[in-house]
Image: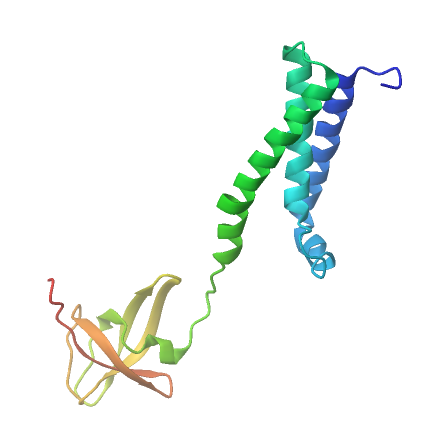
Length: 174
C-alpha cells in the first residue's frame, strides 16, 4: 500500500496509538470531560480497539499467508471481542468502584472499635475504629456515663458534637 509493506503500516499504527495511550493515561480527566456529552465515545475503548486491531494485523501479516483483506477482517473481529471483554470486565467495574475517604460522624453510629485511651466514669477517652477507608481515632464517652477500660471492644451508640457515645460490645461470635 503506497509502496510500503502493510506490516509496516500496522506496526506504525501500534507505535503511534501506544504513544497516544500513554498520553491518555496522563490526561484522561481532560479527555473524559471533553467527551462527556457524547454517548458511546470512550477514548480508552477506542484506543484499545485500534491497538488490538493493528497488533493482530501485524502478527497475522508476519506469521500467516492470508490475504490482506482476510487479515484485516480477522483483526477487526478479534479486536471487537477483546475490546468488549475489556470494557465489560475491566472498565465498567473500575468506574463503578469509586470510593471516598470521607465519612460523616453520623455514619459512625453502629460501628465497632476498641478503646485506646480508657474512658473514665463521666469523662472522655479515645477509641479506634477501623473502616474500609482507614483507621479513625475519635474522642469518646460512655453512653450511660460508665467507665470502659483500655482494649475493650466498643459499639458506637450515637455521635453528639464530635463525641462518640459508646458502650462495651460483646460479639456473638467471640
